Amino acid sequence: TWDIVPQAPPDSIFKLTAAYQADPYPQKVNLGVGAYRDDDNKPWVLPVVRKASHILLSDPTLHHEYLPITGLPEFVSGAARLILGDDSPALADDRVASVQTISGTGANHLAALFLSKYYQFDGERVVYLSDPTWVNHFAIFENVGIKQRTYPYYDSKTIGLDFDGFLAALQSAPGRSVFLVHACAHNPTGVDPTEEQWETIAQAFIAKKHYAIFDSAYQGFASGDLDRDAKAIRYFVRRGVPMLVCQSFAKNAGLYGERVGALHLIAPNKETATRVRSQLSVLQRSEISNPPSYGARVIALILGNPELFEEWKADIRTMADRIIDMRKRLHSLLTNELRTPGNWDHIVNQIGMFSFTGISTAQSKALIDDAHVYLTSNGRISMAGLNSKNLRYFAEALDRVVRT
Ligand code: LMR
Picture 1 (cartoon, rainbow, N blue to C red):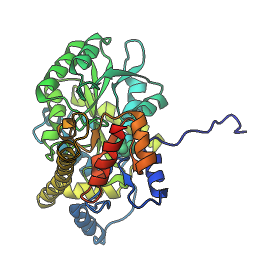
Picture 2 (cartoon, helix red, strand yellow):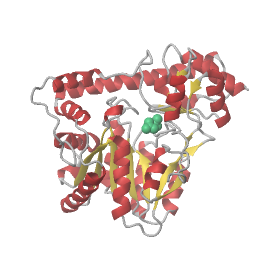
Picture 3 (cartoon, protein in one colour):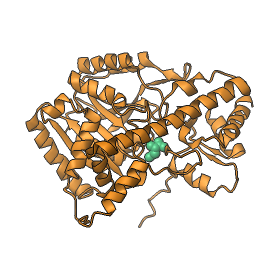
Picture 4 (cartoon, protein in one colour):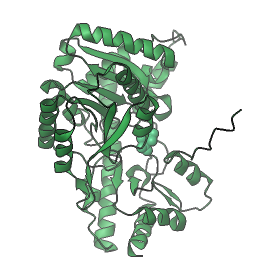
């Protein structure tokens, strides 16, 4: 019966984790998946999450009933305030339709599904994705019958933003096109527009009446500051760009496996938001019935308690600072000590979890095959996989592949 089912290739990111785990080489390094590690290469349970979990689990009234279909109300409203800001005009007008989702991937999926049903595409059903983008974006839109096209984003010559190319794509796309943008700490490049560039980008959205999907998977990771990392989103809301936000707590709360996220659709008015929420609820019911409760309860507790919230912000800075430190040390090793050919300033200029090294597919493969350093074939490295013990080993391995 299933003879027609072809064998699928393994996932391009998670196959690296499996290969790393199976590799007996003692100095192996995993720079594949974007997951934070401490300086001992261990997953880090944020102290504030440990504390909130403890409070939760010692509550004798805690039960395991279903959450509402749209999620834990205090989580959903707290998450909306966190990303849109306490002073958000959209929240003041009560025109945000928010739903708890299965982390950022689930938010992207629910958004894509909703758009596939209700967005009035003026022609082709297509979403514009940055070139490059998180590889899963393609599959998510493919699944709901929305074609994917890419817009210029990364300039391999400058290892920076192709701002002119991005802007030209916004200007030449048919009106009312759907563009997905990364809110901050662009995955995989670590290259973000500046504040002024975001303003120009917003202007282009407004001029062409484009729809913006903000994917926010790294709030807090770009600058170490939750508010600063939400600036582009809040600016777009203030300018009235039609948009939605996909929000993940996987990285900034270290809740990867708990699947905590939310989708926020900013509607033009309260009445529209109410209708949109009702349809998101219908879609959610058929897909997952109700979202999982544990992670949402942890986040709701942290967001609702000023003391815990301050602790969370400090934990985020701990992660962001360690990554920034690794960037500086890697840059210094390559530039000052090993004198690796080429310019490596982008290592310190890029932000967030990832660095796009600029090395070729062949060089990336050589790092895996010859040095047991696991990274995606596009040359992306997860900075969080580097630590004081493996940094030199990695820098020397990178130096070798660049020289050969
Ligand atoms: C990544 O890009 O490594 C992360 O976002 C993890 C994932 O789901 O791919």
